[in-house]
Structures are given as structure tokens and as C-alpha cells.
Amino acid sequence: MGQIFYSCAYDIENRTCCVYAADKFHANCYSFSGSVFSVHYLLRQKPYRIMWGGDEVRDCYDLSKVSKTEDLLGLSTYLEFEESDLTDPESEFKGCLDKVKFIYDNSKRWKKIKVWDDAKKYFNMDITHCVKYENFLVNHTQKLAIDMADYYNQSRALDESKEAYAIDLIPVLTETGGGSAMAFIQGIAEDTTEQLAGGWCGDLLQIVDRLPDGYSLINCCFTELHGKLNYCHIMFGSNKDGFLLKNDKGDLFKGAMLNFYGKRGPLSQIKVQKTKKSVKFIPVFVIQEEPDYHA
Figure 1 (cartoon, rainbow, N blue to C red):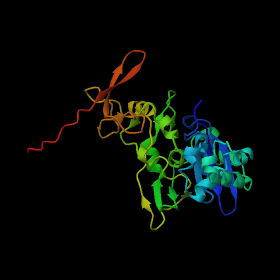
Figure 2: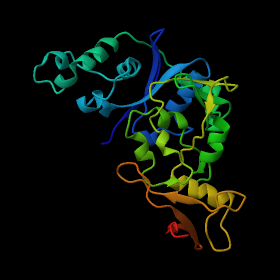
Figure 3: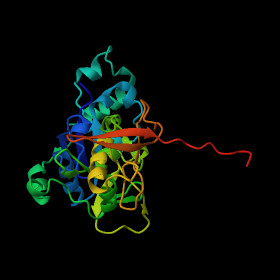
Figure 4: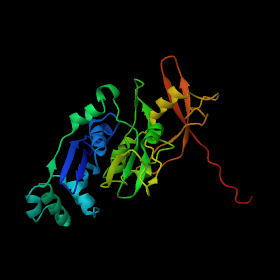
């Protein structure tokens, strides 16, 4: 079936949380998704810890990797355990019983709020079909920030109907593991910063008007191959040799596939092949020149 994810915004101090089932990661990680616009809305009101939590983390092997109390509290907003999981001597969770008990006990202490309708109205989603990529997404835990307009400019894509969208940065930055790999399964653009995936999971985030003093601005781009090819083809076309351009400066688009471990394969340029009925994008490996150690 595949791993199911939940968008979780939680306030440890006030014990409030907003949780929505977000289906499989690559089904609801986009700029038009309900779980996304709900989290964006909340972060424009006040800081929340954010976790795009997968249900496979309940496996004892994955739970053993969770050490921070703030993250265990995040898991308690959406994971469910039975009392028998705590008392059965043959329970599959006997190797991480302390964490299961912590999640079980704290899952009953949250006041859950719903903001879907308010968020949808706030962003005028029926008309815009997109959250606002303005201002800064800041990470108060790590003192980092991302310019959201810059993120969108780098990451936006076009669907088959030529409507713009983007993989949203928040689900990828805050996922518990395995989700972004599915979003990138057909490949990524060269500029994608896939190494950032999951690095902000459970951190205290907020969307603010100005970059706070002492915060470092980092580059962030998450864009899968198919939609980005459509975008670049429509917006910039190809050069005289038929290779896809990535901007209006004449730079060539390059993409790559990720292997099972999330590591990049070789870069490819994209040859555009047009027929009367369709456009094909054909990858052509970029030959990397070996350094001349004798020079």
C-alpha cells in the first residue's frame, strides 16, 4: 500500500495540535494540497513545531532512532497504540516499550484544533490554487531561514494543463523518512537540495515578514523532474541543438535520478524531440571530464 503520512502542527506549551491525514507523501505535498495550506496558515499566526509524520515510524526499529522529547511528542499527535501493546510480553514493541508508553500516555493529552476551512478562505484556494510564497520560513530551533519567494521561483513546475504548482518545502523539510523519496522517484532537477529532506522534522517553525537577526538564510529547492521539464519547455524552450533550457540566460537544464539510498546518479541534459502530437524529453548523460593530474 505504501506509507501514509500525517501533517502535524503542535504547540508543546499549550498542548494543542492540528493533525490531518495527508495520504501517501506524493499525493499531498504540493502547493495546492489541503494539509499544506492548513500548516501554512497556522505558521502565519504563530510558531508551531511541524512534523510530516509517516505511520511506518511506529516500527520499533525506527522508534529506537527517535531521541528528542519534542519529536516523541510530535509522534504522539498522530500515532495510535493499544494498551495491550504495553502489557503483552510478546508485543512487537517490547524493545522500545518506554517510547511506546510515552507516546501512548501523551496522545491523550492533546487538544486538537481544525483550521482547514479558515485556511482555505485565507489563501482563497478556490481561485489561487496555491499558498502564498512570500516572506520567510524560519526555523527557531536551528536559527535558519528560507526565502519563500526564492524557493518557489526555483521549484515551481507545470502540470499537464499548464497550471503552475510546486512541491511544498514544509512537507519535505519535516518528514519523518521515506516520503520525499517517493516524490522524487522519477528524478530531480540539478538544483534540488534533496539533502535537506527531514532535517527540520519536529523543529519550531514560523512564517515571518522579515529575516530575524542572527538567522542564516539557506538555499532550498525541491523539484521533481516531470513537472519541471514541462515548466522549462513552456517558459524557455530549447537551444539550437535541441537541448532544454532552464532559464532565460541560456543555461541548459540538467537532471538526475536518485538511487535506492537517495544518492544521485549522473547528470543528464535533456534533448527535446517534437512531433505533431507530442513532445518527448530524452536524457543525454553529461560526460564528466576527468581531472588531468599530470598538468
